[in-house]
Length: 306
Image (cartoon, rainbow, N blue to C red):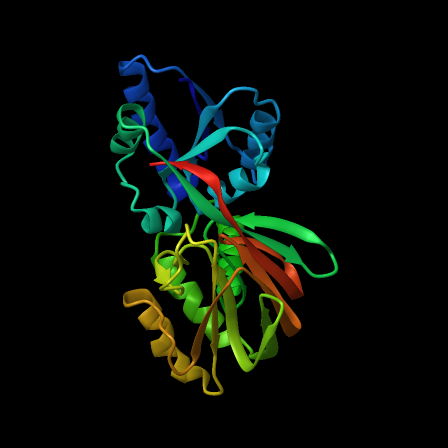
């Protein structure tokens, strides 16, 4: 079988290109056929995935070499009716999808596994619809509004200013601290599966998860399972913002559980409303500010190589 690769060479401050070169050497050494597309700008991965899946008449494997953002683009470009199986070689800074799926960081081990012991799993993915604009985005890991999205936005501005990806995981920590200081609480509610409304004051963020992790290893959705057809909704809120610091730290080291300042819910779909426009992200990719979001889970329609 011929492999198709979408490679973000700049992912992980150049790790994308380094890992691709190791994969290429393995493919050439073993005489495995492949086709390669390098991204050069935002949106390239989605356009190439759309082109490949739109013209797809026979099953094939499409492997992404990049970070969570590149995987998000590929997912959003795919014709979900096409007989395509996705593979992933993690090369980003956060690598939350790889962390959840326990994908090896060694690219040769990953591609060797695809070639010698091809296994396919059917996973869930999420769909976000934004308020009156009707903007629709798929997500593979999570989507969020509020503080977590503000951190993603700050990192994106840093990347654009520097002309490259921010330096490692320390950037997440520093930008997280900065955005925490700048954050202002909001009021809002979530409606779960159309019939249960839960209201909140002093919201820091609301995230919706297919997989447990976001933000480079923060386990904000401890019970999220990418095969159960359910979203896990995480709401972090509290009158005393400083009291939420240990809550966020526990998300990094232990995983968030229902406790003071944290509410976790499971549902198939949810409506989220906040009283003022807040930043929004899907898998770390920034969207315009929104007040109303609808999220839903599409069960086991994403076919992924293991």
